[in-house]
Image 1 (cartoon, rainbow, N blue to C red):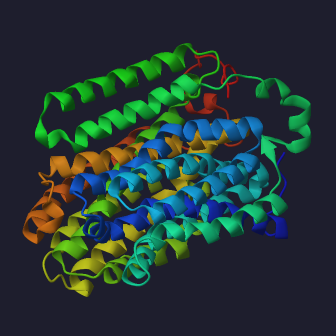
Image 2 (image 1 turned 45 degrees about the vertical axis):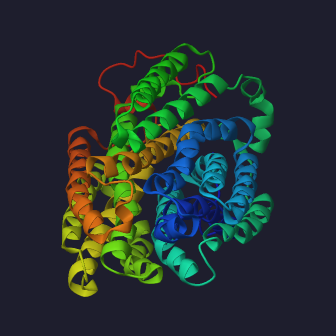
Length: 495
């Protein structure tokens, strides 16, 4: 049984390492948004190129994150985590040196591969290392500091863009990696399949000899890439776009077929026998689709329409950072006591209200009366739901499946944000050069925010209807289903 206590020196090193690693990936999911107008001007990029600057990273991250979790479960979570940190840093260096939009987009795709290796490992290391009595608080702190990493991204990006330049948005990851990797190797215990190094050596040999689901990983990433391309380029309505969309849907169907029939699937479909696991991931899709659209468009709205500088736009988003830092650990502990249903119902509703309040933000928006109220409500909603959402995913499966469960949930979150960034400009009627016109962008933004709010309301309804508190002491999927579980045992075909 994992026995590291949060109060111990080792527990603090583990938390620091996992927060540093996950923050690298989270920062790059948000920090780039503030830099987009400057990148567009510097590299003479269209809106579609800016969308791909965000989405190339998300395609490989979402498409391969399941494989990253499986690699950690099989070969060692610390080993794969450190490999991901180093890969991410090298790809970030390439992003910072990119001379054209095409090279930047390609480097962002490589960055996503590194993120797919390190992101599930960061959370799985917490689940596999900490004593059960400290796990909820540790996850709460991880979620809180990770949320801070995501929220501070716009501020940090604004400061870097206004100072040394947008390239340092990416180059900053190099010193972070140089700090994170050695600390992980020195202080974080190795684990695989829910076991320590010693027990893994005794019992993990059979698992390590299994085959990797390379075809499944390729089909998943291909489906996301094709659908994303079709959504971004759909304004033209060409035959190529239609064929690409159809090919993307066929790839998605093929992915499900391969996972169902593979002896060693990347995504064992039996894990969805847990109704709790399935429900929480559906809520995740709704929540992170709205978040992805919100942060992508808000950073542009504040600069293109309200006239904020990159630094001012980043500073404007700081209230969410402060609230996440102060209250996420308490939110995780509260969810342990009262269960996840109420936080996952109320949190999305608060975020939906915040997005409707953003409709007040237009030309010459007053920060105190127009921007701040929306961001305070947004921060309260994020505090309410982020830590309970993460803890609920892990509580719905056993420890041996922590990497897989974390990978699936992260894949759901990233895929949702990816599709939102691709689809929301299309749904809101945003033209290819909209970010160069304040009037055109403002009109599209006002159509987009109610769409995001509606998606959050749907997530809240799903949580209220289907998420339940697990029975005390029961962590198996059978605890979260109605009746008997007829699917194959989760150990079959595990990665």
